[in-house]
Image (tube, rainbow, N blue to C red):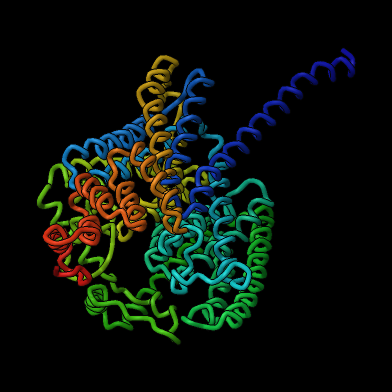
Length: 640
């Protein structure tokens, strides 16, 4: 056979191979873009905290899931994945079912709307994701976080361009809107990106990930979030504990860590960026200096990652060298821990001091004082009072809870000090209070399944860092209200889902076309319909609020009436309508509007207070008395 004939026979095989590679690359790219699109827009929209963002997220997620069900003949799902999706579905159903006994019916509906974002997003991702595309998932999530952190950092380092953030009191929070949420968001991203820098297959991508890690860590620093730092370290511990190649991973982390630490060190010494009430010109000057340092350290991290790669290629250390390295790392950590404990007078003394510090009041940071001191404080910052209130609420309704979203009303009625909050600052305590033992068991089961998968797939090169990011979220959720920030929750749950997808094998059950169609009809269609319906109502209500802010009373009244038609369960449209009617002198109509609002949410003290504001005589006194009964610690409610 001639050489030409042989070449002719090889060409179809080569073409098929190229076609396969192109298809795999396209699938991976779409996976990365999809992952970034699920997280970044929500992060830009105040983290997805407000109800106007939920429909815009849930409806596309549900449509994507429906398309996957239609276009794919059979879908492979591991039993752990099925349990995971079943658990989030059961949690959503339990949130909705709590409407039957909730003390705050309108807020429970809002909680259901938010939970539907998580349900639809996870279903869509599970139906679309394939195990070979997990590196692209990590890359997409890391890119989304790095992009958000880059913008966020720019608002601090270039305040003359973006404008200073007065609300955050010098703690970085934009665009997510809450410094602790931005902190854990950046921490999870730093863990994922550090994993790409350590284990990525595309060398330029590894270098970029190393540089982006510096940006994320610097962003984390400027949030001054103690919980996020602790979560970051907890994630690192988890990654090193489960990774069979922990020596290589720890070496990779040590390659990037000095550059991140250098950027943080420069930032921490920039007086105008870490102290309150500094002139804008001084803040801008310090910001430009830190920006240059961050760029240089990011470039250094990228170069260090490249150097590490070439060293790994050319030198494979002997087992004795790896053992010696691991022993040295353990000894250094042990010595550091021993020095720290000895500094505080021994383990018992250190534990007592930490506990007293945790129980104590936070040290106030005033003008001229550095926020750096906050990072080394263990104060619970009022959380113990919130957790105690949540525990007492749960004790009164241990099995079913008091209804999703109802903690705020319980807090105002039973608080012993004037702290203004909406959530219990702990996902687990708040779930116990609002959804009872049943809801807590479902939540814990949901969150535990990715950890079970992590043990099974820990040998996969990116599994440890996926587990690290997910574990960081679980730790941080102990002390904050992360569940109310969809950008953070989806980032974490997608990381956990990645572990579940990696656990798939040929023995995993396949979902055929008939069960897929049933799932589409039973879950996705109702989710899409309700989310779209709620989206319109939330949008109308937001328009009414905007018109009220501009003083356009007639338009505000029309928009509020429209919102009331779309949201018959909510008191908020009637509250807005009352404000518009009162502003134009229609006091009797405003009283009627407020009565409608109070009927829908009788436990909301603010509605009774505003009813008193538009009422007269005995009706006013009664409304104020109800407001004081629902919020005894509020000093601004008149006695008559």
